[in-house]
Length: 105
Ligand SMILES: Cc1cc2nc3c(=O)[nH]c(=O)nc-3n(C[C@H](O)[C@H](O)[C@H](O)COP(=O)(O)O)c2cc1C
Image (cartoon, rainbow, N blue to C red):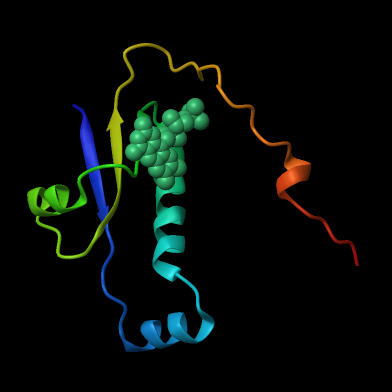
């Protein structure tokens, strides 16, 4: 059965809000990224296909799902019709050396 997981963000409590403000960091997005990565990796490990969606009618989805907070992502999950084969990428992935820096001490 296909499933859509709607991920909405909650509100910071007082100390979290203070920390985010003080450190000028968006911890909610970090948490949602970690959640999505683990969720899709575990889905793949269990033989499920997934697709992360960030482009949708946010207000409509929030209303439909009954979320109070802003909907940030939807993850579609389901059994793939065929053996999942990674499709050819239109744009080549950047080489690791372009997106990482190593410093030895
Ligand atoms: C945060 C995020 C949001 C995304 N939103 C969409 C989306 O709204 N619609 C869409 O077609 N793909 C979206 N994608 C891309 C797909 O989820 C998927 O990553 C893409 O098809 C590349 O898959 P591949 O690496 O297996 O080729 C999004 C990806 C990420 C990471």
